[in-house]
Length: 499
Ligand SMILES: Cc1cc2nc3c(=O)[nH]c(=O)nc-3n(C[C@H](O)[C@H](O)[C@H](O)COP(=O)(O)OP(=O)(O)OC[C@H]3O[C@@H](n4cnc5c(N)ncnc54)[C@H](O)[C@@H]3O)c2cc1C
Image (tube, rainbow, N blue to C red; front, top):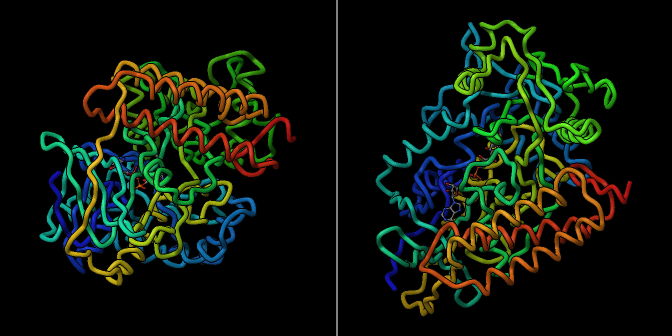
């Protein structure tokens, strides 16, 4: 099998992978692998913005306190402090790459406010902050002479020799299997929303990095904490499209099909209660009334302001025939963010020497049992920067490596499709916002059946879609087993048998 060497290997081109690549390229050559195109990522879809205590009445202490409150006692305090203290620098880094953020009339950053934040501190670019960030940072990466990018390149396995990670094996479109070797390897493969039927995540979010780490026996934690966004569009043509919290922040209200503003029945903070509470309230209302969805009502808000502040939502809903200044938006909760993942320290190091991880694929300890809105883009930058500053200390790769090539076994695609759908069904049913002991047991049993069906299925050639199915099974098992082990209702984990 062909192999190629660079100083550093990065898997993933969301904000975590791109930031690491740019910073590590100051110290050596970098190879970046990504399984679709460079901008296919969760990052590209982020709407609200990125949190940083840069406002006059704000401080890192307040940002820290808000993050710890959201995390419900399960955050790592040191990691949170590291995150919030480095936030202003992270914003500066993005501006240096050419990211444009909304400004006030006096040219200061125009800071938004989201649920759980005690101050205005969300730096944003209208409602398409992720697109703007991904645009700016990916252009810097593409222009960098020390960085080589492989698109349509799917990482299938960590390469490990003498207890060190020395790179990854990948399937490259048109080129076949290749080994990419480096003194440090960064896993930045993002989230795993596709384990559920309804998610805000794009198609690349299949938990591949978590499965790669699990196969190597690396510690993974907090997978039971899956964040569900309360308000995503309920429409057959655009499932999972996010209707940002900022719309509720601007005054939009939640109503059931009879027009009742039902949050009065659930929480005194009404529509701006924390995400997990709003999501649970919506689920309860939908179950109680036996309906498909509830509605977000923005009809009393100024139409011009809506169009200006929420251009993406305004435009997308118009394409679907919904005029938000005149009619209610049908919404349901959907999986949105994975708070758990590969355990790392403040420098992005995993327990396997030579292997680093950053972004949504990790458990750095900053989110605890519930992520504070807009802290995830921030986390991706802060931990990638510290990892990039650390990797030059890694020893050089030995001249002679003897790595046995291995070919990933992929079930034929039609079986993989069936298995993925069955898995999404069982996870949505039993491992969503509400869980029970019996439901978790049933889910684990079904996952076991699906795993064995995958193994027994006829094989085809390499198929990324099929490899993702196997990874989703690994992720699902981790979510269920950690949910079973968590014997208290905390943050995002809610088991009706424990209440
Ligand atoms: C709709 C939406 C709105 C959001 N809004 C916000 C917000 O306002 N503020 C905020 O802070 N967060 C927000 N988030 C969360 C945030 O966008 C993500 O947590 C963050 O962008 C993750 O960045 P990342 O670099 O870790 O992963 P990603 O951006 O998902 O990038 C992962 C990369 O890894 C690649 N990859 C995956 N598997 C493989 C493989 N096997 N081989 C090769 N490449 C692979 C993918 O193709 C992709 O390029 C939002 C998320 C969504 C979906």
